[in-house]
Image 1 (cartoon, rainbow, N blue to C red):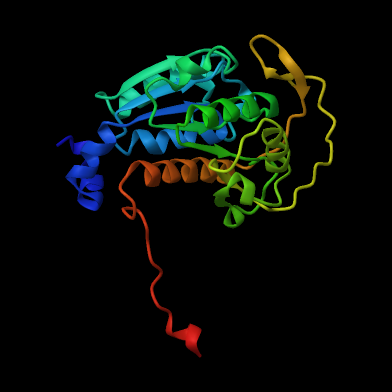
Image 2: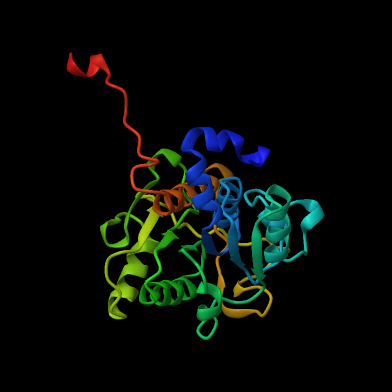
Length: 263
């Protein structure tokens, strides 16, 4: 048994470790949320990854992205992610795709995957990915809006069509409904009310496009975000993925009885 996973084995058992070593996760989006999802899954004995991101690290990523350091500014996220996974688990099989997730590439992205994790923060590419993932029949989970949230204790999970209070989820639902996409995509979301007050950029602010490398799509407003909240979104994505990959009930917990509740 690899020593790096010994504490996990003592918690979920050797058979489940072997099960996770045989699983393949496709993770699209390696930023604030996706990076922390990958970190947790890499440390959970997942055996194979397909990692997709066509972006590079910038200084504005450092406040919340696990791959972002002053030493990694200007480097490709997909390549950095692969290196980090292999430094955690040298036995993992990792395919890093430095590509834009779009029509014509989804068969490549989804190939061999047991579960698809969407951590894209751009509406158009997110909807296209989720439509294709849904129609592929592969179990899929997705992160909704994490920016501008202050309270991590409001973060929760539900089917996309049961989520509420999240403007991104509402727009994603609307667009997917028109594309005949039904229930079955689980999401991490927060119903916290958000203030979309526009803050004018400084003169030296970088311009954010849907894809920075190719300057594709529309310019995006740079939204503020907390490292605590975005990281928890990512960790919850990872935990939900593990629940779906392991036998039913393996990660279910029960709260202890509190005698004060009966008073």
